[in-house]
Length: 337
Image (tube, rainbow, N blue to C red; front, side):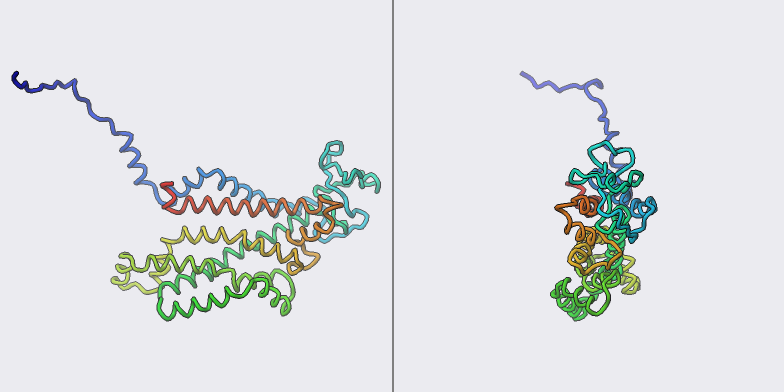
């Protein structure tokens, strides 16, 4: 049998349609880093919910105290220990002013009085005090980020960039600071200074930036030997220009992530100090001090501790969700996961 040469017609072939693959590649190339990070962040439902919760809580912290006729330090003994009551809910099973099967509003003849979160043992409005306490927690969050950025980031970048004896001396200093417990530092500060926001801020400034400095130093050690840094040095760029113009933009995502993770820790530190009596002095309220006060009457008036605990838990959970979402969005290694 002879071998026959195969013959082909035009109908045997058709052009491959790769328009979809080309379009995908084109879109990927034209997409900036920040736009790509935003798209990944937006697709993370937990992070979006966390951000929305932070915005809602921040809004209530701003306008909440204005919604009440009472200030955070207004004392009215006649209104003491009143359960939460909202107009229109008098006949419902919640916010009806009943605590331990007793309606204190009716007993005291306060038919036209309403307290959304109730009152404490001194007759102070818990709605106003809770949102004033939330302001303190948000202030602590802002201070934590500022300290991380202004002290921790710069300290770590400088230490990692110069290296050798400078890095060795700076790291030994950090080890000395980190070896002292925060509670000891705050207690010593309160002995010297008065309890309050200034004392807590100084305590955070002493040790709150150490974690950020270590992250910044590690990133600097990884990047300072790269070719783009050598090119900048060859072109005559100064040390600080290389640190803040060349290297910092490449690690800014990790810096933001670390800052977000430090916020819940700082908020919890303030709440813990307030709970043990080393925080904000009376009559100013913080979420920690409100929890401490409500804890004393928890078995009789559980509503006193409920509002600050829920707000603090939501705030810390929201910041953790936001930090997780930012880590997934800004870390290029998470893109393939």
